[in-house]
Length: 392
Image 1 (cartoon, rainbow, N blue to C red):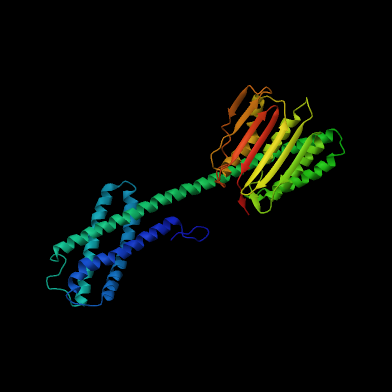
Image 2: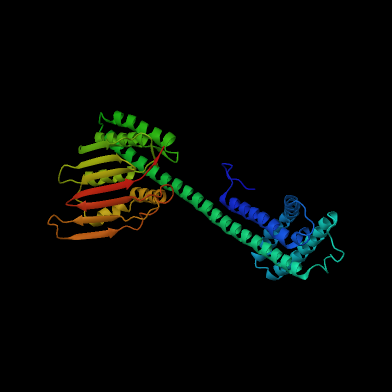
């Protein structure tokens, strides 16, 4: 019997065990009616005793049918060795038929119920045919059990391989995000040091908090939303030190007891800063909101920009955003669309770009529906992400 890591019987084994139990229950009833009933009806004995004897007999044959399913069917039929399978099946049938009638003869002799003519050859032809057909049915039933077990085992193996593949893919994508984020943060602090800014030490302290998160926190599969929010705050504080912009970060709703994937939001926030701070014509702004609603989390990133749609599309394909989208696809397998929409100020022209690489991080851990919208309208860039996380 196989067990998983939690010591729970796997579904494939539950079905197999159920099949063998059904076989054990059917055989005594059929055999009692077809063999013993013919003689015991003339020599009354307790039915319970009869059934007990027959159950013991059938229990003796159960290992033989298990062996037939696990060895003959599995090793020969499934491997397309049909001739050997046919020969072994015929031999198995003859052996079981002979053993069955031999045991029946012994039992009836012990009960002193065996007529003189009872033997393997001269026994009732009709009973012989019935028992032969029933043995064939048992062999077919054993084959069906083996077929179901084989199919479910393959499905389980594929599921395990897929789970392992997703696990390593998530690790790989997260490993891509961490250096990318760290490089951008170090670049911000480097700019401050070149300016000999008094804010550089404060930025280094914030970076230390960020590094602590990178090293000790984000190695878990899921972390609390509060830790991710603290991490985002530290990043935003570093950007506030570096740039003069209208930066606002708000959190709405109860964040306690909510678990999410690390680095789920940061690339979208980084992307917002990149768009806003590239704006040289007007004062940049970036408004970030995380709203916790019953059963879902909503991230909104709103910033102004003067970058055209083509450049926006190229940036969305960058490592940070594409990595986050890949992770989202693995974590949230529900189908979704990602559109970039740019509308001119006169609202007469609209274009869309369908991004194909947004489908790698939404696929493993959260099966519920989600939406991710990226909209560029009137030189205002908006990212809206809605997910349905698991409770702690």
